[in-house]
Image 1 (cartoon, rainbow, N blue to C red):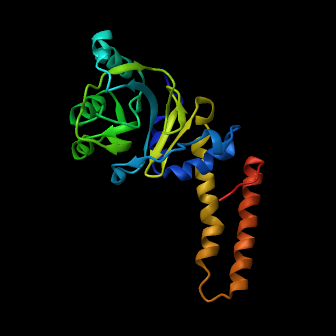
Image 2: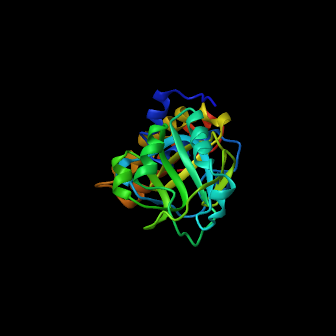
Image 3: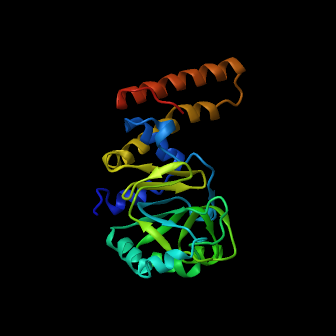
Length: 250
């Protein structure tokens, strides 16, 4: 699997938080932003100090409670790792935990995060638990998860390389993922090429209109402040319509 964005593009996307990327994405998508963009259930970022992560989705399903998976496919770990290695990076591992909500073990820890880092992965979004948070952070491997836990249980890959649903959002292998402490969003291949330009434009538009209008309120009357914000909002909308042919929100 090859990807259209350059390493430089990905580095620039990583400079903004996920809400800013969303602001750009909603200007270029034909999908319903409220229904098809981001996680619908709460996530927790256990390494917020690492900032956003950006990468392409690789997927795996686990069921730690069911030990039978080890006997059904003893080679599953090797086959799964070869799948991960076959995909161009950077990659974010999307893990669907079939034991949810009764999570009994973690796919992730110090060892597995270091192994996946060696395979070109920068982090994970797991609809279950993680452990060894400090050691994962030391490996440079970011995680959004539901909770922490102590044990690894009998975690064994069940299936991989297929669409999965985590935190209420379906993720397809190869989707571009942007994630931080706010949550995550998925961008399919046909929308990735325009994402950076759109995010840059929307960020600059806010910085040139509404934000300076709000921050120049000192010494003004309430009416003057409201008039200034109204004018800035109108200018913000005009810029969006001229650039994208649609109304923009902030």
